[in-house]
Image (cartoon, rainbow, N blue to C red):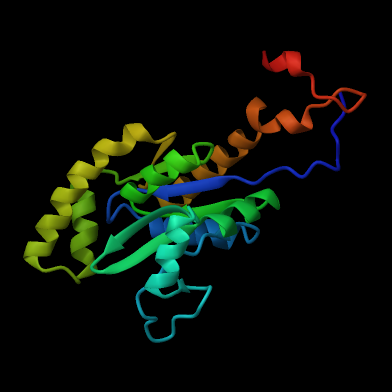
Length: 215
């Protein structure tokens, strides 16, 4: 069998989420630094830009009217309303990068991730776990930005969120950052070698896919 070099291999949609304090943001930052070809998905929002935030880099800023109009057209992989403002993941920008062969990273909360799974089930869904709940609590406290009330609320929420791990394809424990990043890179490599994802590139000498392989 020959590989058709004219076929552009689609990229992966890598959805990374987990409870607050698990370190998903730090992991995504490290992944992007090690893999500059990865593309970080940028969310859309109707809230006003904050100081130093840039259009298309931090968020795609838009009016509520525009957001609602695009929402009606199913232009978002997922969306939510938070404190009167809308947030969403633009479908077109994500899918176009994937079609170009780019691996797209989407760092998102658990609720959003499950919505993405409904609209794009072929994504790779990775749940970031803390080494222990005690360590998770220590990390949240270390931030120094939580009141006692908000700390307990966030910690109780984390206990509930961990139960959603069974909805994901993979779970990665973030004990040592470098090891967690390496595990995710290994997941990406394995996913790209799956028969289902390589289907378009497994060709006969005549350039025809051996369909009987997938019966």
